[in-house]
Length: 334
Ligand SMILES: Nc1ncnc2c1ncn2[C@@H]1O[C@H](COP(=O)(O)OP(=O)(O)OP(=O)(O)O)[C@@H](O)[C@H]1O
Ligand SMILES: [Mg+2]
Image (cartoon, rainbow, N blue to C red):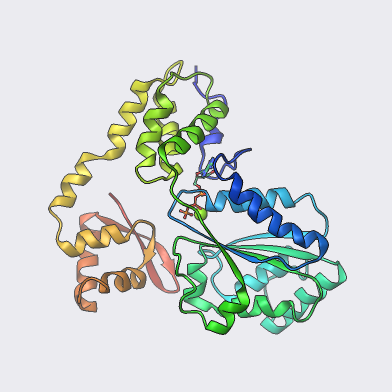
């Protein structure tokens, strides 16, 4: 018999009914966005913080709340996927039904279609630009375009930007940055006690039965980084090996595996550059991003950098996930 009541509750894409310990942030952002219901202009929001602290979850939670209001259209965009002004405007245009196909439009046409559709339908927008560093780095002109829309219509747009990097807008032109009128909200890593609440809430939804002590054990592990993804991964793996009830001993097995002493052993024997590259790869990054990061602490040449990368791929320390703007996207294997 499976210990799962609903296994899917533990999948990374599942959006829970409650987000404990983010109520304050949710209230703040929702109140601000609710100005749109009165056709007033809200502040634009900038959420930043480390991985797995609920930034995306909170944004999606809020979009779900606002879904019920007619006259507001919610648009969620991940800038890993769409990272040019053209792509973002197309996505917005399609979402509001300004046109159907992505093809054959010039940017100016897209722009005026969006304005027209908002105007005709008395539509206000909430646009979330998640992983916005990908966009700012690549084509920050979209910020200008989004701000410009409001010069042509009485309708309003509330923007939510999300990034791991507090300073993501530092290189954006001052004029645009100040027009963005950003309300910054920091998401800090969860503490042990917060993590424990979050874990317990999920366990109630996911499992038929579990032992006391499971949540504290997992929370302690996940709170090292404050990252809920770690907790969810442990719960899922432990649940899959558990018999009739999720037990402390199942969790211990998974945690042992997860810490991966082998990886720590390997790390010890790597060169400084290799170690640094693995540290830099806390998430998938392009060769260019890795090189730029590495440059901050080493005056390595480009040729030497590529030689080391190739070595590391051969060693199976890192792998190529795909291509982006003709650059390889790499991630660590360990
Ligand atoms: N307060 C919370 N309550 C319940 N689940 C949460 C909470 N915070 C985060 N989670 C869950 O943890 C996982 C990771 O959260 P999320 O995707 O929001 O992280 P993030 O801050 O966007 O990280 P990244 O910067 O890596 O994108 C999701 O599955 C999310 O549902
Ligand atoms: Mg996220």
